[in-house]
Length: 88
Image 1 (spheres, rainbow, N blue to C red):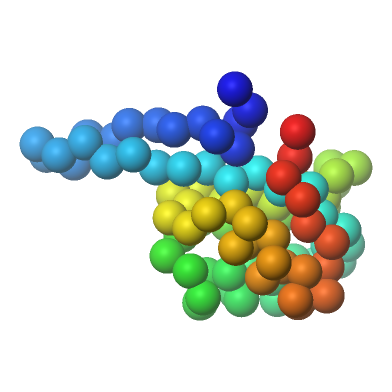
Image 2 (cartoon, helix red, strand yellow):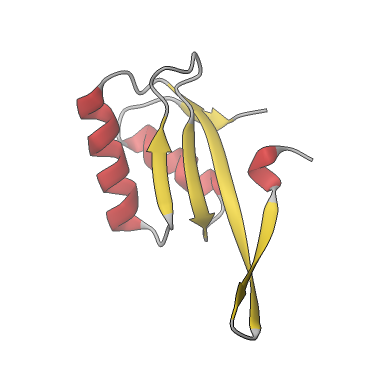
């Protein structure tokens, strides 16, 4: 099982909610690019939180509570001019 397929269960009173965590390798390299991408994702998709680790060699994009398919995120990030792939 890879981390991007990790499902966690959260209790919300009496309901169980499954949340997906998306983990992607990117080439986002600056603070400005990171902010631009986080804002674009947050305004376009229902996500809990979004972060790009600029210190990691893979410039890892992590999206919590991802509610769309990974390939949709990949295509979206690529349309913004960045490389993006599921981190294996």
